[in-house]
Length: 495
Image (cartoon, rainbow, N blue to C red; front, top):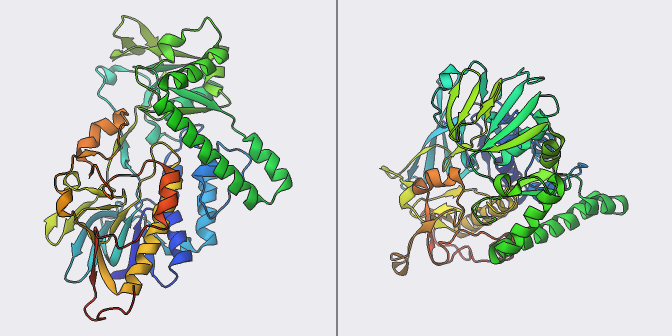
């Protein structure tokens, strides 16, 4: 049996960051990081498609404790992966990671105040058991096993290659080929301009448009500050500037959607020219930030379309045939390669079976406690980033709060912390964890996710500036997070 005070599930951006915070802020706690794959990095090691990059700027996607010193604010996947691994080495996290340990089941015993975690090696089938007092799920929000692929009639007849970005085959040659990218989300708008540099032609085939925003790949303010300030100071200033800017854009989009639409459509119109059919191909039917905006650095997608190397087709797929895709409108798109950039499968948390004192946990019946824990599930913290801002902004906050929780439990002699509904909370009106977002990947699985309520602390925070101002000052013991003391230690003199 392998035991640690804390087990962290996932060695990606969240898991490494959480472990680094634990190393810094809870030096007396032992921990193990379990990673299901054979390498560190999570998303940034899994995805290998051409042009893989961040869709948030690195001054906010980077950790709060480690400055991003790269030249580009919108960074490529290899640079982000190197940054994660460097952070792990600097804080000794890499010495605590155990690879090929996919967590399949976690069982809590209140009598022992322990989680028993069963981790499988998918290559050998061997199952290893671990125990811990506190379990931290930093496994992300989508399935690593496979992406979402709709069923397309006639797909088996197509003579070319059909690939999903989550399983991009090594050695795929698209030079001089006709490529169709199905989708209009972040992955599609990343792939199209990169493939268009060498393909005969690339078509972005979308069922409906997505809101697209162009931003500089190199932040001009960061470039100026880095000339006169130490890197850490420049990073902090640019990070704060970008946090405030993102917050302003999001709030304006929600309060003045018409104004935001005019801004986004104006960007597209200036890039593509007055004769381009913006209304059909770049004007969604929903409001900005009903779904996440798609970022295109330096307008690279617009450049590819304007040059003729790529084009956008807005239509529905009828069926595949031997040489391409037939459309519902009667049109047809020829293809040698089809890329199904159709999204991923939302899971929470970590595709793991949870059992508490012999009863299976159905997360759809739980309430989210401050978006970090779940009602009646002890000593389990889940890291979920913001949908409307950079993921790591919230991952850092959750990690800092978790360290506060662990230190408080040590000082108070508590071995168990469980969010419990108060009597007044039992009639709450449930709301989706994801709030008002309407993205397809969310809507497919929203019914299986935990609920949020209509009052604190059962509301999932959506705004970094608000949560940042409270998370390090709010009392750990708030009357909802119930602590059970270790009887062997007696009552503490002070918590």
